[in-house]
Amino acid sequence: MKFRGKMTEIVCIQYFTKIISTVAKLAKIVALRITSTNLYFIFNEKASDGGTRLWCELLQNHFFNEYNMIGVSDEFNEIYLELSTDNLVQALKSSSSAKTLKIKLTKKHAPCLTLENELPSLSSYSRLVIHDVPVRVIPVKFWDEFQEPEMLQFDVSLYMPPLKIVRNIIDRMKNLDSFVTLSANPEGILVLQVENDIVTVKTRFTNLEIPSGTGQNEDADPEFPAEVRVNIRKLSQFLFGQQVNPLRVICNIIHNKMIHFFLLHDDVSLQFFLPCVSR
Image 1 (tube, rainbow, N blue to C red):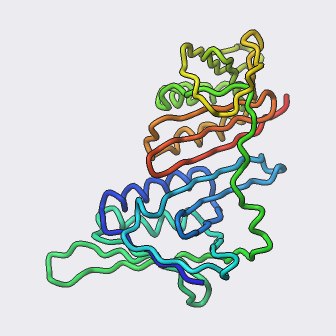
Image 2: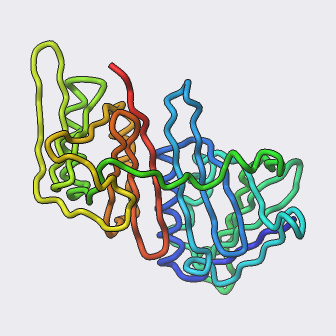
Image 3: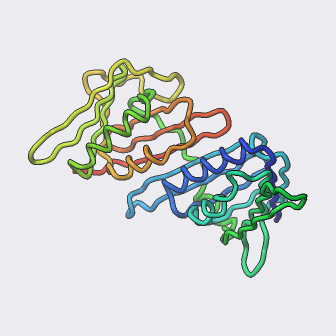
């Protein structure tokens, strides 16, 4: 079992760091799945703790100039590791000005992801900053717990308004209640609502674009919008944690069950699932 990757382009190093920072805002402990073509950061929260889920997928050849991996076996040619995102973010702090970044799986006192940052120097000698991030190797028998979530049939699917606008609205709403209700219909209308014993506040977006081929329920009735009530703090974490500047964000709603956000970019995709909270 081996893994080694090297980045030599500063833009890729900085963008990789932003992705890891985004993931760290959403989950403190993640599974890192390493395959010959992709890296995945996966988080599946227990239902008793809230039930949020995260699936972040990176194409390795869009980031790494050199990339070599050998999985657990010929049959299971993948590697699954558990790690702390805070530790990984800390290790990447010195990468913002690095000339190269090497990441490799090592075994010292325990398994580690070792990050080597080659920093610019005024002399002819290179400066290396090395960080060891402890990891736990996940046995094959537990791999089924970290598979890609199925694309379900959603009642309503639409493209989100600019996240900056939604973020500012949610930031104000979270002072009024611990939960927010999102409702949407197939005609591109999205409503955000919070209420308490004193006041009810709504924000309405209209004429939002409807994506094609997302599994939306074709029988959905515009007169009865799909809605879901979610933890406003977790929604705020998702909105404020974004540093990848996605091209588009799709919002999918299963009535009274779940909301699913799908962030689209050329070389990375991120899915975030928030379950409904009953009244």
